[in-house]
Image (cartoon, rainbow, N blue to C red; front, top):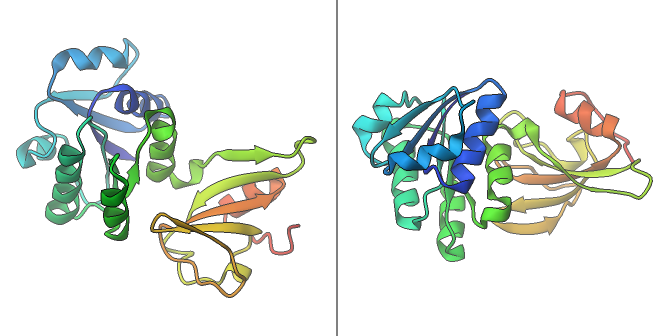
Length: 215
């Protein structure tokens, strides 16, 4: 996966280091060259200095419709511009923008731009959007038998009923609104689903295997 990250603050640098450590191709952009110090000596990706919504700079960063673009500067307006340029001018589908204004965030979620907010959890959420199958475990019972895990609905799973999804889906988050997963509900691409099951059940779901009947 080739990922372009705009903003080398705490969130951007954390995501860049994690993707780089996982062997992904990473280019990170920031207006201030000194910001790249956060990446450390082991970072093997590229750094570019400039404005993240500059089309020539994004072209130099290797932007394509198949890559991921992450806009996590400190300014909502800058991040929105980066997201719009990536989506509208380069056709990038996998775009994540840090937007702290909840009203703006809802609007852009409806337009297909995934949004994150607070620094404390934003880097982890970004990783889930960029690498959907990397989702984390949110809860485990005291015996560590059952787990609640968040996953993002892929294009392949879109249009499937909750009852036919091959997982015990407890909750669906769509356009920033959470709702209990009814069996007849049709999943939509980019829905966030919360799956309850054993580690094996969740792994089977991630691998595309049926886990119907998981309790």
